[in-house]
Image (cartoon, rainbow, N blue to C red; front, side, top):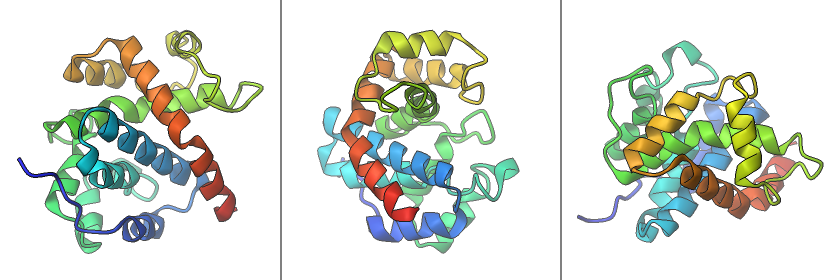
Length: 198
């Protein structure tokens, strides 16, 4: 099977995202998931698809800020208008599987997005209350403690995270540990990008 290719450049994807997203929280989340997806692509042997995985991560919540009630339903229209190919559209919509759409994650990349999206939010919420405000010194046990406190980052669905880990055939600890490493790999770059926006 040939490598998945994106129909748009990274700069075009960023511009497209920013047409519909202004909130720094949403932009930071998009950048985080982009970085995490690129790390996983390299880690899982899909290095030649790293650009594609990253664009999917960057655009995955394109419709969420303006159309929260139509999340993953409005995305195809916005993405097609921006010249995005159907493989990216399928991948973006698949992270709403059984929540808002019936587009099932099939490719490994879609399963990784489904599993790690909510988890990055929970890890980030745990990181910003640490003295370091960073994931660089974050450990699995600290995340697990917060994970079990259901009132902590309550918007991050534990059910989705666990379903995603099961889709990948991974233990929850592996998913958490790898996602921490992935977030460490892109934290400095994201901080610099957010500085530029402020």
